[in-house]
Amino acid sequence: MRLWFQSLKMSGLTATILSLVLIAAVVLAPSFSTYLQQQREIAQLQESVDQRRASLDEIEQEQHKWQDPVYIRAQARERLFYVMPGEVQLTVIEDGVIIPEDEELSVSTELTPTERRWTAEFAASVLGAGTTTAEPEELLTTR
Image 1 (cartoon, rainbow, N blue to C red):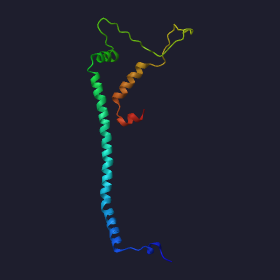
Image 2 (cartoon, rainbow, N blue to C red):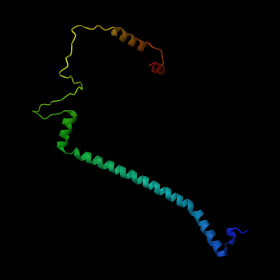
Image 3 (cartoon, helix red, strand yellow):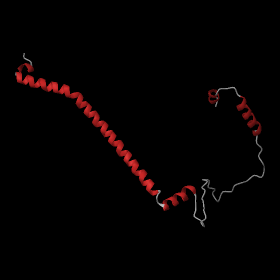
Image 4 (cartoon, rainbow, N blue to C red):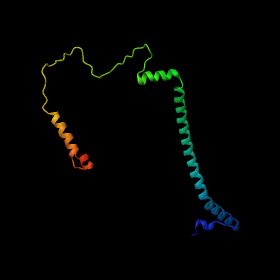
């Protein structure tokens, strides 16, 4: 029974060329690996440069807006609530609490006493904080 590679006829020239190809592959493999790694790094750096350029374009557009006096006036009105001389500023405050018109609210005329003496609790808290010997870590864990 003959193996398939025994049936191949190989001359000296074929063996030499095959060995040279094998040696070239072994020699060039690390260089090719380095080349691929550098190409990946170049692509990442190019993406980073593109992102920075886009960010720079946005900043330049924002800076160009701030050169316009109309934009500056609009921002001062919106952010700082500035008005021009002679104008009246009206500010709408939305409390978020809407009382239906048909609902009657009952208001008590009696005072409701508190059950705690806040002055004594406040004094005890101040004195306790000033005279404690506990470490800061212990105070944080007791909360």
